[in-house]
Length: 305
Image (cartoon, rainbow, N blue to C red):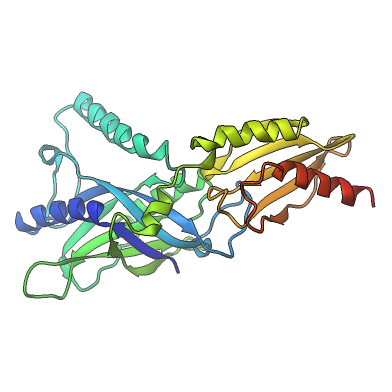
């Protein structure tokens, strides 16, 4: 099962909010996190194949947003928000979405989630069940499915067993392929400079300064190249003519040019048929300006046999 990490800056916001309402009558609380994920090493899938829980090595919570406390309507048995008017609620929703977009627009795997607390629980806790907390994770799963991810992340904060002072732990849960909630254990709090946090917050190659230079060089080296576009979850899709009725599609994963592989397939317009997806191992040549040409020549060589 995936590990769950929470950056120290996000945890500081979460812990402060949870602690504030726990001190105010042992009330539950809500915090909105942004979380991304790192694929497992064995997960080699095209951009449109759903990512399952077992395809993920690590979930990483990178940022957190605490709602203005004047809108919080928490109690000992539930956490929720209450607004004086629909207009205020709309302004709040717009502000929350604007906060999330400034990050999700740059970092393709980030999604906004939901963290709440069970201050009455010590050592461990679980979702409350159908009609309760399962509603949260089920709703998030439905949204994640529209993004090509067949799971969700539910985090519930409870008290730890340490008694010298108040400590909190984040109990984590995912959604398996059978739509069942499974435990992912307790989250680990890590430095903002942790390599896994930095990796989730890596911008796609095409959006870096060298990305357009590499794209222009590819176009010059492969005149048949006609498409260069951003696909889902940070993938880059490249289209090129091969010969006759055939076209080549090359898919660069979000970690390109540091990825060990790219995927490719061909399309026969006469037969209206895609070939099966194939793996091209880069062997340390991810930044090679002749990448698309090499794959195109490889396809041509095999096609003529």
